[in-house]
Each structure stands twice: as C-alpha cells, then as structure tokens.
Length: 140
Image (cartoon, rainbow, N blue to C red; front, top):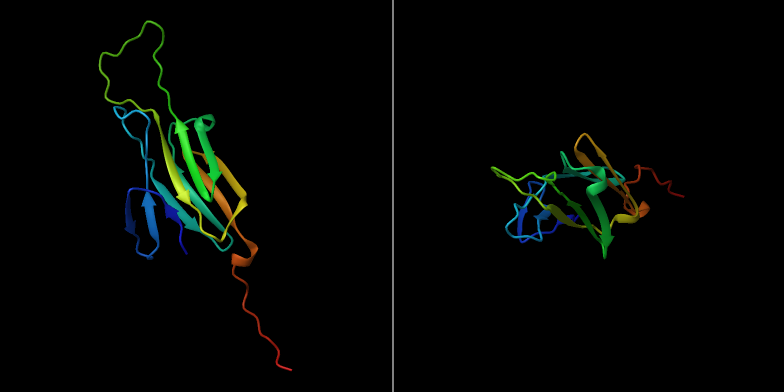
C-alpha cells in the first residue's frame, strides 16, 4: 500500500510504507509552518489527521487534483489601525501539505472536519479494496 505525503525528503516508517513530507510558503522571509500529520488506515477508509490549532475553519482549504490531495491554509495576523510591532518573533503566512492518494482511495468520497484544533480528512476506500469476511466455499 503506497500512501505518500509529498516532500523533498522521504523516510520509511516501521511498517515499510514510504511517507514523504512537504511544506511551502510564498514568502521566504516568513516562518514556514509545517503542521504535524498522522495517517490512519481502517478497514474501509483512510484518515489524515492534521494539527491545526488556532487556525480558523474558514482559512483551511482541501483540494484534490490528479490523485493529489492538498491541504492548505492562509493565516493572517493583522495589526489594528495605529499599531506597530515593538517586538516580533513570529510571522506566519500559511502552509500547504500534499498527499498522493493510493489507488484504493475513492476520490468521490472525501470528508473533512475540524474539531479541537485537529483537521480530520476521511477518504473512503473503493469497494473492491475493502477486506471481505472469510467464508467457506462448498465443493460440489
């Protein structure tokens, strides 16, 4: 089973699945935010869990193009009129993470929801990819 998180660097997890990670930002002087991700596989679904604390639901975008799922967010911290920074340790534009979906993913059945700072994107598996219960075949 190949479920890739796209990136310039890749590593192998203990299960032997090849995972890759990528974070990008438009402004190179801006700190790159790379939310941590967990990928879970159930009998009939995959679930991508992305840590998104403090990011509004409306700022998060989930797109699918050519079997690549992209999760991104625009984060804007604006000053009020008449304010200026006396000290600034962080400046964040946003993030983008790309995930190459496996052939067994049903791209027509993808759901996303945010709860308690965790974005959960659930991707159903195709019917032919789900495990069937063991059965006995009668010999005639």
